[in-house]
Figure 1: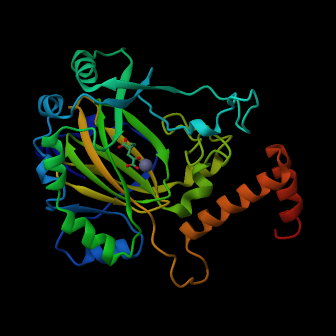
Figure 2: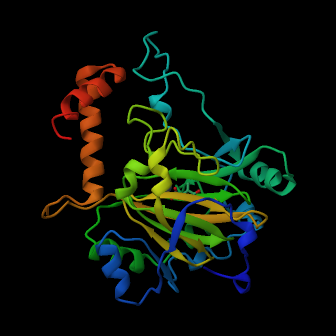
Length: 336
Ligand SMILES: CC[C@@H](CC(=O)C(=O)O)C(=O)O
Ligand SMILES: [Zn+2]
């Protein structure tokens, strides 16, 4: 994978005891790109101009043109930015009732920050300081120059993919500005994703949905729903024995690369250590209609089924502790 001539080297990658193949890197005009996407397989698409109009988006340009809006910034005391769903945290509601959330201490703080302050903290950051990660949906609060650049994205390119792959509508574009070494731990999303690298180098480690039982996602009701419970750097093989057999693929994204992250595919994303800050724009699309079901079900369909079973059981049992005994009674000795 890659090499020194590509502006990064192996010493900038975190070391894991995981077997990883290379994600194919194909030119955007290669017909194999469509074939892989049609199979819900990841592919790095090179040479497209999808976000070429944003290649000038360095920090000074963004500070000058991003407008005076508030941006969502996550703050972490370490290098990890594990996503959590606030709606699943036990909360007092206005009428003094509580939602059916759980007690949970978020691992990161989410704040609203003006861009100049974010950039100042980015530039002044030193080892040991809290880390920051700007993750903001692009909306109409940005300045006119950014709107112009946004309109100049190669929309024909991504619209043709959307049409060919029969995806649903584009739901959002997120601007992601990360510090060197920041890690978004392994998780999956329920949307199709074109992940466009604008500045800096990002390592993306992906696992097929069929690795579900090796990645031990938090329960659906948990704020870390869709996130793996396994700490890749210090895996607890007694709690997560199947993680030993994990198989995945990876790539180091360079500016201009576009990675197709298929719906339900697990991914861990890392800004290379001792590298520059990174800037990414992602394009999230609703999945298209399932189309003709073939049997046995594909692994990503099985993940959707498992999520629905979990949600239904929670709905009827109310107490998550009731699920394991019921599932054991259902399966052990009967289906095993
Ligand atoms: C925002 C988190 C992550 C990207 C990602 O998970 C996605 O685009 O789905 C990253 O780049 O750190
Ligand atoms: Zn994601």
